[in-house]
Length: 106
Image 1: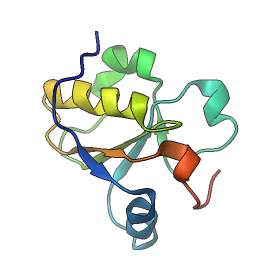
Image 2: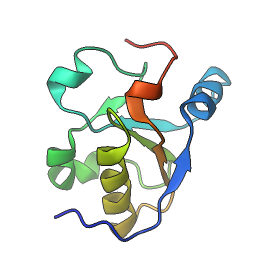
Image 3: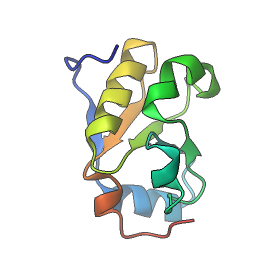
């Protein structure tokens, strides 16, 4: 289902934090499992587990910049590739995932 062969743009956790603090209109999409998200997520992030992404792709706005997040950056990379292959031109993977996030969590 998820193949790794598309180049994905990346963004650092610090860049994401700064952009959120500046009030930029970006979508944070957390693709971790529910038990991981229950331990905390980036405030305002939308949660769609990677395994549900193909069935829930219609819930994501194609025209907005979407930053994908997981625990370490691996699953979110696959999610970003999947979205790009399905017509989402403006997706990025947050490097290092939540392990590298030092901003607020909810």
